[in-house]
Every structure is written in structure tokens, then in C-alpha cells.
Image 1 (cartoon, rainbow, N blue to C red):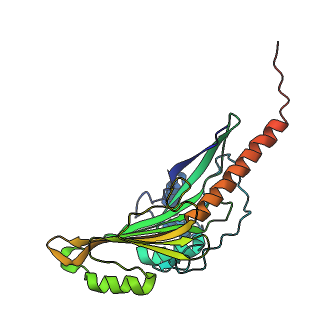
Image 2: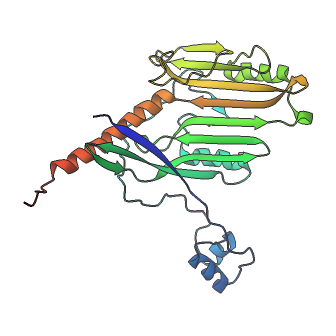
Length: 282
């Protein structure tokens, strides 16, 4: 029987105060009863000043951590984007992003569902992404499911530059070569470096992004991770860059982690069915 796994995305909305002027005990208690409370009210009521980040209990399966994630040891696996790296913990990533985003990044939670032997089962909510967009600079990181803790498996950065304050292609090209060993041939182009199964790397200048998955016949057998860079020139001023995106992802690890998720969820169903004593009433 074919096994299916579905990703369901649910955004976590951080609480906001009913009114910024709520400063008395009564006002703060009223705000709290409405599920909305300010940092000032937290202090008045003696509550923690940290916003709640633990996803709610949805009655789903608690996945067990059984895999210790390890990023590839080559230049792809050890690369960083704004200090963020593959395998970094949720809390370490939050600290870095809070500084870059000039405030708390938005957190999205998710749960997974699978149908096995006709039985549908879901997992608990878990943190999936942190992200922000500030002054044309977008940053988003994706985390592993709980079978490997909550560590980064994908980093995405997209930046738009105004025409009157854009970097030169020559300078950006040199910086990318030095930091990522990316070799852009010209403006308005892209480059990809793949981390292969044997630990070596393979560069595809000006190639299309072929994300290494099982369905990809090109790099599916060997590619594990990749760095992808795409830039666009300023209209009428091709010597400068108007847009840049950089992706860093360990798809090989994501595939293995998803396999473990399915394994645990299927085992849960099998165990439940093994104790089933229901008999038809005739």
C-alpha cells in the first residue's frame, strides 16, 4: 500500500497587547483574560517576559528523537548565511535572527499526518520555520522534525536592492567566490554547488536548480546538499545587482528524517491495530 505524508502549515501568532496604555493591575488582568498581554503587564503581574513559543498540544503522536544530525563536512555543509548554519539549534538560530531582524522573527509550527493501513495519524505540533522581512531583506530557516531535534536543514535569504543603493556585480562576484566558492560567470545568472554522497562537491555554473530528491533523475543517487545563488542586474545598469537569493539546504538529511517520521507513525498504527479487539455485532 502506498504511504503518503502530508505537511500542514499552521502559523503561530505571538500575543499582542489590547492597548499600549494598559498599565494597572485591573487593565492587565483584563488583557490577560483576552489572551493579550504587553511586556509591561507581564512585569506587573509577575509573569515571564518571554513570549510563549511551545506549540499547543493537538493530541497527536510525540515523535522520538533517534537521529543525531550531522552536516556534510565539506564546504557546502559548513557554509553559513548571516551566521546561520546547517544543524544549528532552534534557540541559537533565534538569537542570530533576532539581531538581524531587529526583533523576534516570526515562528511557524506544523504537524504531519500519514495514512497507514487505512488509519490516519498525526503528530504533535513542532516548530518548522523562523522568518522575517526587513528593508527588502528576507530571511527564513527551516527546522528538522523532532526525530532529530529542532535543527536547521534549510536556510533561504532573498534581498532586493534599490537602484540608487545597489552593490556592484564585480564586488559581489568576488565576495561570493571567497565565501562560498561560487563562480558567477556574468550578471543575471545563477550558480549551484552540490555536496555529493562521497563528500566531494560538484559545481554547475549557470545551471538550473535541480534540487536533489528521489524524483530528480540527474543528481538523485548522489547529491545530498546544495548552495544555490541567483542574482539579477539593475534595469539599465547591468553593472549593479538589484536582487540576490542564496539557498543552503541538506535535502539528503531531510529525506532520511522524513523516512524516520513515517517509520514511527506507521509503527504507532501497527501497535494500535495489534491490540484491536473489536468484533462485529451480528
